[in-house]
Image (cartoon, rainbow, N blue to C red):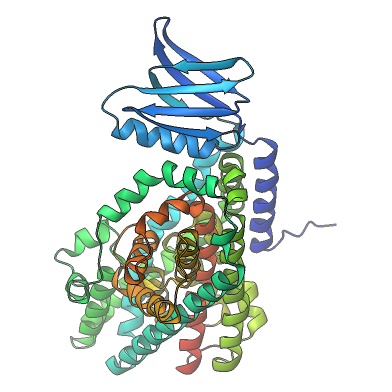
Length: 497
């Protein structure tokens, strides 16, 4: 009997599940710290096992941690080494009693086979990022130049932006509602709160010092690239979209034969990039396995227990937004889009989004998935790159929960007016701060400032930001794909398979 190869999304899902098991099997010992120490005995390596308390001493200030807080200890040590003008001392209490190491040069956790295979996943992400820019540029240029109607592109753009603003506002509202219902801030232990604030205060201060604000004039000015090659090299997606749109429109007004040669060239580039996506996706199950195995092995679950109710509120809200709001939108606005086919075809993109935590890296996969459902290239090449850059429903929802959580930890009860302010500010910030690296936390700082919640509270959630980023990227990608289907349907260009 001939073996039938499973569908791609089944292979990726198997890779994800096996990666979880592999990561658990070869997990990093959460009760082992490896120290590089310099003392009277010379430079040496010291292994700390089964400690009950670890204290870091830097410039006369000390910070203590209990068993099971390896991630917080390592993070605090890195910050101490970066900021300290002298040696960092470590005092440990374990079965051997209390010991002090006065000059600790480095601190690390063990490496296992699960963390050693992570480079395979990193290569996969880089391959997708490599494809994304030429694919977006070529597809968008060809799509625009084939419309023969500039007003149609303006109409598509208007619908896309309107969708993004509305769904972002809905996502924030869901986040605020769950924050008020679950009330995670009131369930947090005071001791855990103080340790998290101390461990991540340096990171929080660095984010706050960036002092980013929403300036729409500067934002509009920066849409226009000064150097197209530099914009392509730096992956400035909004500038690339602007230039591709402008060049595509310009091709409509020059000699048709000359324009045809340019369009034919970029059409071939687009097809080549799509075929390259097919080749890259052959290693997707193995790359997903490597990325998830490394994440599970390395992360540790101590901090997850500390922030359990906050995580429940965020993940619960993301599930509602992803599996309730978007299907309802498709059912009511884009009835000719087969919901079952859409959800089935989108699975590879959702799984890649979860493992890479990047809408930009997932973009080539998302474009292929949407075109397989029936959206034309002229729509996918505009809506999806724009969405990957500025549409952040998952991030916005998490900010709604985070704002309420931090306020509750500080004993603040946000009024209805303040919560409406959060909806407005976060919705506008989702557009206005798009080009900024680390935009999720930056947007959250802007939101907290708008309602007077202490910005230093972001230190409470930085420790679990990586794992939640994986979850909210699924929502971000699903939102972009839903927008594509709605635009294609309302423009009467959706192709039923």
